[in-house]
Length: 263
Image 1 (cartoon, rainbow, N blue to C red):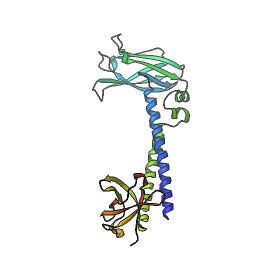
Image 2: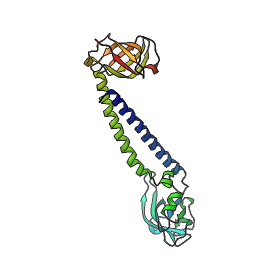
Image 3: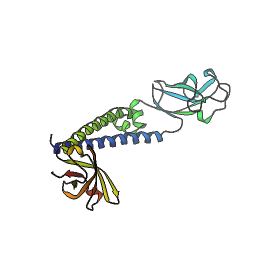
Image 4: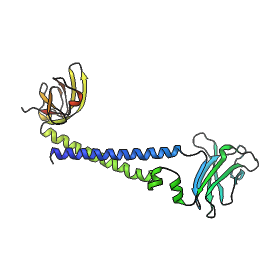
C-alpha cells in the first residue's frame, strides 16, 4: 500500500471519528437539556402504565403501614412496596409504584403522601402525575428531542456510537503505525513536537539511528504541501525518534514533516 493510500485512509478515519464525536456530543447535550427541563416531583406516564417512585418518609412514619397516598382518582394510585435507607444522606425513604388503570383519562393527577395518622403533608411529597393516552403520545411530549422525533434513546445511541468510535480509533492507530513505518523506510517522518528554544525551534520526529541518522546531520523541513521550507540539524538522535533544531527561521504552521537527506 502506497503512502498516498495510507494518508487517505488515515484522513478518512479521522473525519469519520470526528462525525462520531459530534454525534455523541449531540446525544449527551440532548439528554442533559431534557434533564434540566424536568419539573420537580412531576411523573410522566401513560394510560395502563406504571412509574417507579421514591420519596422521604413523613415525619411520624416508620414503616409501609404508616404511609397513606391521597389520589384524585381511583384510576391513578400509588402502591408502597418498601422502606429503605437513602444512599447519600442516610434518610429513611419509601419506594413505590404509581399504577395507572386502563380506564384512566389522559390528564394531570395529584398524589399526596402523608402519615396515615397525620393530615399534615410535606410539600416534597406532593407529586403531579401527567398521564398521556399511550406510549407514543408520552414519547412525543416528553424526554430528549431525539427520542421524541426519531425514536432514538440515549442508551441505544451510546451502544452504537461508543463501540463505533472505538473501532475507528483502533483502525486509525493501525493505519498511523503503518504510515509511520512506510515513511521511515523512505527517510520521511511527521513532526509530532515543536518547541521554541533560544537556539530556534526544537522539533521531534520518528527517525533515528535505525535510519542511520546521527548527531549533526542536516534534514529538510517540509510543509503540508511537501515543499522544503527550512532545514534543521539533528541534536539528539535516538533509535527510532530524534530531536533537531531548525537552522533557518520559520513559523510553527509551516512545519509538517521532515526528510532525511541522502547519504
